[in-house]
Image (tube, rainbow, N blue to C red; front, side, top):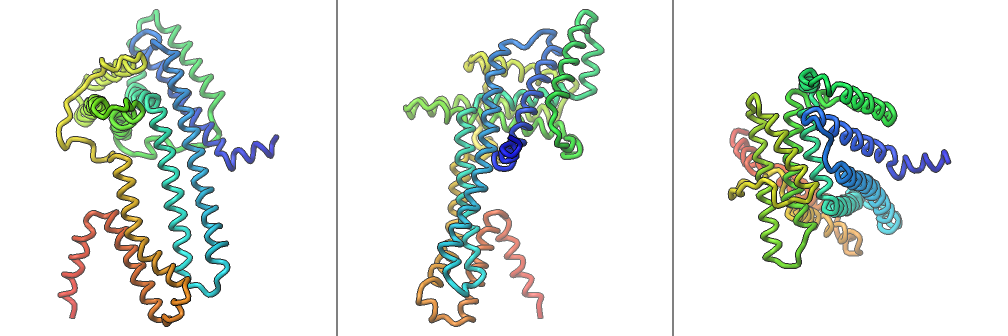
Length: 368
């Protein structure tokens, strides 16, 4: 059994799965505690909340699996290219072997993103709920705020709060993984709570705007467009809360927590029509979260443009006609296609690349 467990940890990412499960369970328990502190009552519909958190656990398990599988696909493709194309041929230039890891990496990353996105669509409501709970966790879970809230409690609630804290401590000590992680403050620095709240707001808006409409297809274009627009208004309302976080007043976070809590209850209760909506302003859609298909298309187009000359050279070098090229000519072609590949990738990553390149051309005028 020890050997099988070791194989699970190495090949199936069992340790990573257990850590993700632990984080989700602790987050849910802390959410229930923070809810009681604020509202002096138990979380309503707690069974439904628990069901959605099981969905989150399934998503993170599958995400770990797909990440591991993508690595294995990459290694298998490298091995396949080496055995079939590279090993049987002698004296191949070094740059010929570069195409194998490039193609393998592209295919493995495409596999990972495709299946993780499909799983996000499947568990989109669960992930939306978790993103909203994280916002409450970062705001109400701040130590000073919790101390202030507990000190303001009436005496009648103190025994219940004490018991809940004890249960939370027991859960923490029983399930805490052995891995030591950096604290949030170490990782993100100043204003880390505000930064993480902003990230969670964007994540929640993306689930509402992109993944939930993809999950609920009506097989009717007009209805699909209407529903996508409706959820886009929900996403716009969520994104509007970023302004509250960026320029808060004294009571901003209390109002924000109330708003997020109402949104959570509506979602868990299935009351989607009651969700707060804001009209979507043209051009106001988040620039940090482009649609997956447009992103994938841009990556694919860039890779095709970058790899095509390199692939053509590799194929040519594997044919008998390659013997007609001298070593110097062949090296010049290799340098040119390598430069083409590098410049194409840089132009895709850095939008100011053309301007920087023109500056380099202007600098030549100062050379003797």
